Length: 375
Image 1 (cartoon, rainbow, N blue to C red):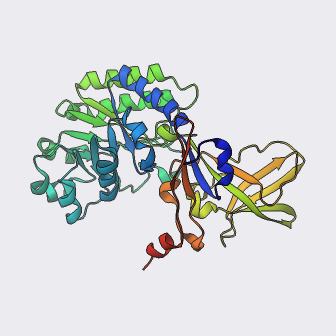
Image 2: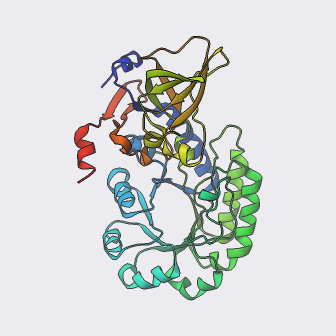
């Protein structure tokens, strides 16, 4: 364990650096929302599942929600508390395993609910519904896109199986920091599912709500959620991912080489495709810390063989040198869960800055991890 920030100079790059103090700031906002709204909050493991900081999160969150058997098992073993299991489609052996520890089993279709009902009856069961509306800036992540397979679209399909359900789940947001849009959506949900909700005990409003973003109207947000829950006498769940860990981690890299092709290109010891894949998928530029308006301009590129492995542009008042450190901000959500072994590049270590100021190296990876990932 490293005892001070200056000791991070001993760390071999690349590595992810998670800051518990920044996580705690987000968790306190979530605690405020829970107290004011009566909602329960479960961590979306599809976004972030680095369990070395779960001990901190346990004090504020009510459990975890998953998109697969492995995520559900991780939540059960490493987080505890409530385990919500969901999958776009279950295999029989997965259902068998989930019945041993899941607190809620949520199905994506009526067909799967009916197919497995004899195996799961007696457990609290849910059904994902697709309200036909969404808030997303990306078609790739839009759960209500045309031909979407995510959730039951026709409410008439729900009525025959309503006696088998205790709740329903909706996911209709992605990076939504627009409170008015969310509030309006709640009104539409009340109109569409009101008759159904009166016969259920809980509803999950899913994730994708950016209520920890600066200047978000937390009090108004809490008030409308509380009103919605009271209107139908149900327990409301929120399933945040990004809102829990936004701006709490960075990818720390070092410059290995600088080449020139019309512009100076600094090659770092990390890769966009291998270590921050979500940025590549959505064609977003990385947030490179301390990039300013100086006269020295660089393209910051990864060292994989992919031509488009580019983090973004960087400007500085002083020239970059081989060995210099560059930090890529906001490297927690949908980052560590998507890291991969493309090109056999070294996997970044994971370092956690604890609340007491110590820096703990919680995971290193080596050739054996690469070897055992294959066959």
